[in-house]
Amino acid sequence: MVGQRVRTRFAPSPTGYLHVGGLRTALYNYLFAKKMKGDFIIRIEDTDQSRKVEDAQKNLIKTLEWAGIIADENPERGGNFGPYVQSERLDIYAQYCKQLLNDQHAYYCFATHDELEENRQLQIKQGFQPKYNRKWLPEEMGGTIPASIIKQKLKSGEPYVIRMKVPDYVSIWFEDIIRGPIEFDSSTIDDQVLMKSDGFPTYHFASVIDDHLMEFTHIIRGEEWLSSMPKHLLLYEFFGWEPPKVAHLPLLLNPDRSKLSKRQGDVAVEDYIRKGYSADAIVNFVAMLGWNEGEGSEQEVYGMEELIEKFSLERVGKAGAVFNIEKLNWLEKQYIKHRPTEKLIATIKPILAAELEQKTSLMPLEMITSEAYLEKVIELMRERVGLEHEFVTFSTYFYFEPESYDEEAIKKRWTPDTNTLLHEFVTILESLEEFSADNIEMQLKAFVEPKGLKAAILIHPLRILSSGVSFGPSLYHMLEVLGKETVLRRIRTGIKKIAYLVS
RNA sequence: GGCCCCAUCGACUAGUGGUUAGGUCAUCACCCUUUCAAGGUGGUAGCACGGGUUCGAAUCCCGUUGGGGUCACCA
Image (cartoon, rainbow, N blue to C red; front, side):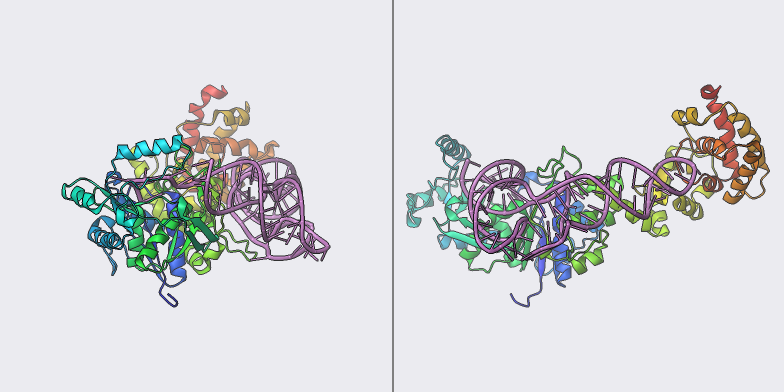
């Protein structure tokens, strides 16, 4: 064990989307492995055939890679410890199960579902803990069923499961990297089913076998697995294997402190991708939910490389953390603020292209789709958007004519003289040789000051007419970017369109 | 309910016996300002409770309360 190359795993079941909690588990496994110059592996736990979802495995891997979490070994890429899909390892589990049977650490159980349920209800009614009653424990293991009966049942092809025999009244102790020493009494543990009647192993059995065979040195998983730890440890003991080190991560919580779930917001990483969050922000955010650098650090923004460099399991907290979307939003803004313009352009382009398929623009297409133009939009909007797609969706007026005008703002900003002033100023704008921000500002002030008026008297109406809304970047710069032709057109048609409001 | 885990501002957290309990998000006020942002300054706000241990506890121990997880032929 000492000096061994670190190997960690993320072992999701392919039942659908990637949960943000799963993303964090995968992240921590990845960070730890990379920090230790080891390997991170993805294994698919598809031992429940009924819950298997088509394409889920592909999607899981794809989403993880989107986040920058690249596995060294996975079902698609392969590796020296494959197969990495449990349904392809059935013969392996059968073989180890046989060993347990031979060693009398496991036994056949022919109880039916109804029988088990009945037993369970009875125990609950009597105030006992629901627990398998060991009806099928064979004589030679201390039970009542003679070997001959078992043999006969087997021969007749009756369905059965195989259960592990949990020793009575032994203390099971282990050291969790995050939580410290934890102790369980074996009498509280049920005789866990190892092999289901369909021939598939249960999670507990398959994961122990695989974790050993795949030579993982550290198991990092959610706290919901903490209480099944003793079963796993017993299995390691039965086989005479050295268990890996374990770390149980605190849960991610809803705002009401219950386990993070659907119904109270989005839990799928895919939901956040769809909304437009970037991998940088999501990874950064999720990493900080339960881990911090400590030592008085006040840093909030971390890139993947930096996380790898600074991550440590010892600094993972024990208490659950609420998934607070506001902080995510803030982080996203931080990233947008510092993201290279070229990168932003690359993500905006297809979004704009899609918009242009839906709506027609009166502006020259070559112009508004050019990188030079997008760069100017980004310059003006960078500190005003919360998500990348908002360079298009929150800034539509840079590409499309206003569809409506903020009526509230019009009522507030229009005086009886506004239209007259506007008409006069449009003529001035039209005569401008150089349609630059400085020039527009100069002209506007020169126009307004002799009249004893403030610039604001025209600034607001100009903004509303040319953008439709009352907020946005510096007016002069916005007009410059829009261009003379567009600005003149919008003011002229705008005045007509809002006439009903200001007559 | 049994077992297990957890507990510092509304949220994420720093803190490992002696601090005016620090930072970030959110929130409030002010400044900047043509708007909206961004930025700046300042403020409100926290050690769940009760016992110990100690000269001294957010920090260590016990209990209480509260929250969470888990008790399947699901993972």
